[in-house]
Structure formats: structure tokens, C-alpha cells
Image 1 (spheres, helix red, strand yellow):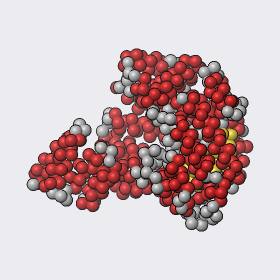
Image 2 (cartoon, one colour):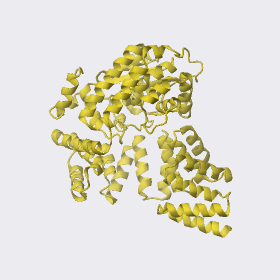
Image 3 (cartoon, one colour):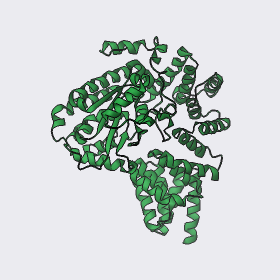
Image 4 (cartoon, rainbow, N blue to C red):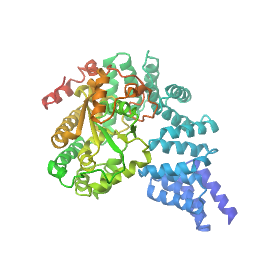
Length: 527
């Protein structure tokens, strides 16, 4: 029996390498028929469930492996990956930490552990694992690409550039790597542009397969001041996403209407938590606003203070509201979830969120969660946390919209890929902003991006004072902050503050005229 189990194990593992999941499944079943308590059988079964995107089943299988054989680091890291998918980030971090010293000679699981660390916001811990994986098995494309992404998050721009150049030398048609390379520095000539244009011509792929290279070309054309041509490629990218996104902006508008109707003044008053005694001795700071309005810049300034830690962009508030709403849906958030969550125990929502973020918290008394999307949930935040600080970033509407329009959000913020949808969403967002100011205005600290970048010290002093913090020079020298940034601004945050992006939309005034007209017709003042 032992020899047969070993044979099936070898066969299953070879099949895994070629992603022949039917054979892997057959081998797993064969092993478990011979020995119902075989850790290897459950491990192979877990790999099949993982590949089939059945995380609950995969989690159960990998847990069985560890129950039968606690030394199986491969199952531990696979299980950590499933925890990450389920937003059980604290469990994922604990599991990797427990098995990390057993990964020294496994490039596959060093890389996977690094990827899980990155997914849960711990890029600093991921970096040495990626380094070790690439040392043990150099030249593996996946390992190199993961290390390059991590290097960007950590501000290791030279290392990232070197890796992307090596990858593109081997695979010149890899569009995402062209995009990542284009983001790393300002283009000084059109050599890379011409290389990418030649790629488009030679591959002949449909538009939706060219999204990343469209945006890469547009970005470098903009660097060179070739405005009209840059907009042409931004539009190609946005149109390509829009045609395949299966997105209806009206669903987002209905969500905003539901929030305004549900999270009204009376609801906020009823059952509002009065003291923070039931929570850990930490003060949450929520930095919100539309994407690309200066949320990351504000986060970096504040998290450079000795009393403030950033935990980046988490989706835990949305996750907790979903869980407490009692509504099952494939949508990330909808009106029914808001209504259900509004009827639930607000203290439970508060405790669940603090529990979810606890794995990230250090000794500093304040922590920042800067997911822009949390703007939708300010009512729940204000009601649950009497001690929380809320910072809302505003920016010139045209600069705000255009900056979103030219950014790849990896299919998030789907309204941003169409000027028509952008206009509609911006108007709705402004309506929600006015609602929050009417209901919780005394809790909201509003910062204008333009004021921040043109008078950094004065605005920083005002902001710190509103947060009850003493001024520290490090907040002005935020570009020296070495902590990771995994946002769309991960490269820019390494620069000193500048105002080059103020009124940048005016270079594209003709192309953006329909958007400007729509905003003005709906009462939005465009400076």
C-alpha cells in the first residue's frame, strides 16, 4: 500500500506542474481510498479545490493535512493563502510566521508565502522571502515578477526596473510588464513607446487584451507632452475595459441613494456609541475621498508622525458590513446590505472591524485606514467609533476625474473608465458628500489637495492640530518614509511634494469638454 501511495503522490505532483487537475483529483481519491488518514491525499485534494476556486473546501482539506501532519509547511502556506482569500488576514499572518523558518529550501513556498504577505499588506515581510526564492531558483518568471512588484511597493525602484527589463528582454510581448516599467520613471524619449506600438501591430490582439499597453503608451506620451495622442490611448484603454466590464453605473448610483436614505440623522442618533471604552486603546483614522485625490499623500504625511501607523487600504469595513447585513450576494456591496447592516448591532460591527485589523497594529496609538471606498460607510464609522478621526480629501473636479480616467485600477472603480460614467458618479459622490456634511459634518476634516501641495507646512500643521498631535518635521519629510505603499501612487510617494499635477487636465481641455459640460450642468463648479 505504501508503494502505491508513493506512486500516486508522484503522479499527482507531476500532474500539478502541468495543471492536469483531473489527474491530480484521481490521484488524491486513489490515495484516500487506500488510506483515509493520508495527509498527502488531503493535500492533493486541497490543490484541486484551490484550482477549482472552492476556498471553503480547500481550507478544510489543508486543515486536515495539518491535523494529520503538523510539519507540512506546504499545507500551512496553502492554508494561509486560503485565509487571505477569505479576508482572515490575521490567521494568514500567524500561520506564515509559524512556518516561515521551515521554507528555506522551497522556492515555490517562499514565493507563495511572500505573495500572501503582500496580499495582506505586509510587503516588508514578503521581500526577504522573494529574495530567497529567486536565489534558490533564479530565472523563474513568476518569482521575478513578484519580487519586482514588491520592490515597487517598498520604493526599491532601481531593483524593480532591472527585473522588468530582464523579463521584457525574454518576453517582449508581456503587456503588464511594459505597463509596470512605464510607471517607474518619466519617459525622456519615445523608444519604449515605439516598442509598444510595434507590439500592438505584430500581435493583432483584440482591444480588451491590450489594455495595459494602451495605458503604458498613453502615460509615456503624456510624459513627453504629446497630449492629444496620449488622450487617444487613454480612451482606447478605457473603452476596452468598458466594453467587457459588464458594468452599469446606475447600480452604484442606487447604492449611494440607499446610503443617503438609510444612514440619515435619526439613524445616526439611535444607538450611537457614546464612548470608546469597549475598543482597544487605538484611535482609527479613516482617510477617504475619490481615488487620486491625495489620499495616499495625506496618509504618508500623517504616518510619518511618531504616533501614527498606516495599515494601508483595507477592505475590512466593507467585509464587516457584508457579514453583519445578513444578505448573501455576489456583489461587493448593494442597497440590501446597507439596509441590513443598518439594522444590526453597531457595536458588533465596531468590534468586528477592530478584530480584523488587529494583526496589523503596532504600539502607536493611532492607525490609518485609507481606502477611498470607505467614504460610502462614513455613517457606520461615525456611529460605531466616537473616537475615530475622519479625513476627506477634495480636489478640482476635472483633475480628480481625469486622474481617475487615466489610471488602471485592475477593474476596481469601474465607473472611472468612461467619461460619461465618471460624470454621473462624481455628481452622486458630491451628493453623498453633502449628506455627510449635514449629518456628521462636525466629525469630518476636509482637506483640499491643491492647498496641501502648494502650502504643505501650513496644511500639515492644521491637520495635525485637528488630530490632537504635535508637529513633527518628519511629516514634511514624508518622502523619506520607507514603509511600503501598495496603492496606485506607490511610485509618486517616494518624491518630495510638488504641484505639477494641479490643473493638469487643462492640457486635455478639448477632449474633456463633454465631461466639464456635464459637471457644470449638474451644479459642480469647475475652477
